[in-house]
Length: 362
Image (tube, rainbow, N blue to C red; front, side, top):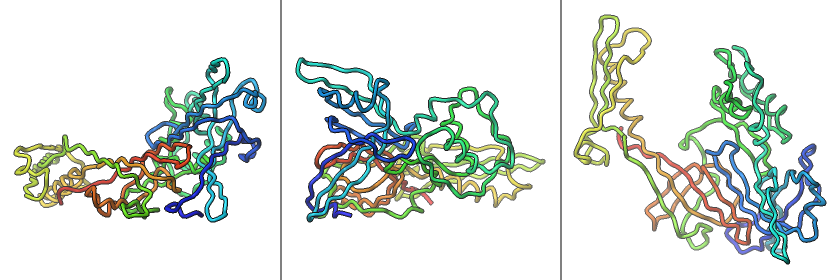
């Protein structure tokens, strides 16, 4: 593994991939530019934009008339006489148009992760997995059947509490995402674009895979920005319980002078009210009060989004990173990466977004 903070040479290689073996088959030398997007909010978790010049018809001859195939992108580094190759993703490419300026034929290509194969096909109408079935075993089977990419088998004993029926609007992708959510899992991809099943975890429980700081050897670019939205965050919670001839109520106020969302600092109340909350049995007035306090505590958390750039290092979407950029006022913050844009040019700049949560009461 190279030292990503030290000088190195960087080039990029592209290979057509055999979908049957998921191994490199033929190298492509005509790709001119490539930008890779990794995004946890995208249906297929990412995409790529590729542009190639095909004056010698290399691409056409290798790919064939349908112009659809899987292509893998590698970053090749050279440091201290050692050359190493790092996969950045494997994408299904689909050529849409070609332009020719009299000298050079240029083809822009949209490329997609292997999850596109699941997005393109709906389940049979009325498809269902029955109550009591193992959630992740069935999810693994579906993904294996509906994609050609390798799938990493999960180990989880969670079962369905009721029949899980596909909606008419479902695709195999949306159905599987909803299915694994019942076991608190989500879909993911590794650097080879193998399909993963990842347990859903909050940032506090994750361990950072790397630290981005502002010392002299840092690969972090100087520009960084943060954003957050305090709109709608309550500073008062009211809970009203009225069942079985019992009537209880509780009101909890954030009056902490150190909290930026407190009644004093905002100069007004923002009230969240909950009525007829379900409890096991009949609650006491103290239980209602404790419940209201817990509710205000949970609703007083604000999510911050940090946008920054860095030189390439092996960080995935979903990883936890530590941000320690003291000059920007960001000190020892653990954040979860939610998106990356990777520019496949020397320097391999990664433009990244990560989120972290800060609690303002309780």
